[in-house]
Amino acid sequence: MSNETTIAGRANQNETIAEATYTQTAPQQPVFSQAERKAKYATWRGRIGLTVYLILLLMPIYWLINMSFKTNTEILSGLSFFPQDFTLENYAKIFGDATWYMGYVNSMIYVSMNMVISLIVALPAAYAFSRYKFVGDKHMFFWLLSNRMAPPAVFLLPFFQLYSSVGLFDTHIAVALAHCLFNVPLAVWILEGFMSGVPREIDETAYIDGYSFPKFFVKIFIPLIRSGIGVTAFFCFMFSWVELLLARTLTSVDAKPIGAIMTRTVSASGMDWGLLAAAGVLTIIPGILVVYFVRNHVAKGFALGRV
Amino acid sequence: MTKVENNKAWWLVMPVFLIVAFSAIIPLMTVVNYSVQDIFDPYTRYFVGTEWFKQVMTDSRLHDALIRQFIYSFTILAIEIPLGIAVALMMPTKGRGASLALILVAIPLLIPWNVVGTIWQIFGRADIGLFGAMMAELGINYNYASEPMHAWLTVVLMDVWHWTPLVALLCYSGLRAIPEVYYQAARIDKASRWAVFRYIQLPKLTNVLIIGVLLRFMDSFMIYTEPFVLTGGGPGTSTTFLSQSLVQQAIGQFDLGPAAAFSLVYFLIILLVCWVFYTTIMNMQKDK
Image (cartoon, rainbow over all chains, first blue to last red; front, side):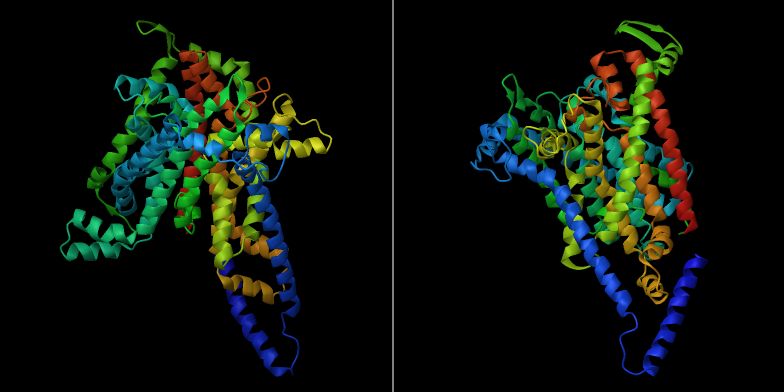
């Protein structure tokens, strides 16, 4: 810390010196011209580097989109950057077949359920962690984190048996509950980070004004951490949406996620590449739509609310 | 922030505790239960003590998977961290460009993991994929389905493609937290670009980098879906990592006892790393 203050201090000092010399001497080149040119050059180099990186990043995705508009004969007959024989047939097949598009509906249902459950239970808990000390709070916090880090493969078989024995196998709620394993801890961690940024005085003032805890929480506190809740919801959505191992294991027909249905494109007559690509493209869209709303807070969420 | 001592706060934490306990403690106890028994069918089972653990500890297939796992995790860390920092440094800081860059960089993170596998499965094939075709054009007989080295290369490349954006985003938000005066000071001192990075930016990035390294380490440690879709663990067992050998054992061969013992060992390794992670973060906050 001391190190940083000296740098900052020196900055102010040097600025005054620089200003002094600048006013004394007659018209001349700005003092930092060379440095500025260098900086500009560095910015341009950065832009070019970033563009190259983004092109490499988007190329595999572009290839998938490109392929989803081609027929299988065209895909197998050679490479081309644009579909020669543009077709919407692959998408038509997905939207015209209930066993296909129900996969998206199923995924959406359990993802939304999970999002709601995670937020409802995590909000009060995060408040408790950010405001109070209680017996075992640190252990509890650590235990939650360890569940975020637990490999789903470890829980695969027990989950299957647990949900079968309580009669929840192949229901949306089973997948939603299973995803709570990693989403609830994540939600608590992110929300705690945001809530700690709200000063305690607000709580105390509200209590003095006669608010009861539930009323204060819903009417005052939740509006204050709106953006935090948005980011948390986004992350619950995202991690539930991208997960397949548990979702696939806990479902068979009625609640089967799109990721598991995609394997149907493999058949005896070979892969239906165009259909596979179209199904893949459709799974990317929801993520891109929601990330737009939280773009400025995404990084904080990934850092578990700790930037 | 000073916190008030109040044990009634437990009532607020209770719902979280119950729901996570249902998803975590009950299954974990089932695993513990299996790990010490030999199960023939639901009615015939014997207590075997630590036999499965001994078997797991000496199983060469698992040792290989563990070694592969470590090599894999360290390889991707060695690539993703420097690359992520570089990308973060190049990202624009203001205006429309900044938002656009943020969204574009974040895209790979939002793709379902099996689709990530599919994308690279297609992209890497010499007959229908751009990457595979390019390699073939360069005169390399590229085939990730039959050559172990190529399979490795593709899996690593896929992970770098998929997760470098996470490191980049973390570093980006870390860089945004540096006050402008620092850069002014550096300009006045005529500090070189490297000096600015080494003495101003890097120290400020330490915190986010710790989070990034540990998240990446742990998530790569439990990677399953992407290599499963891409290579299915093959050719042979060359890209079979821990999660995959566990799933093979538990679901494929239904060896409940050994699989459970393996799960526990696996879980303990994760728990150890996790504890280091937690302590680091907590100390980090104390320093602030």
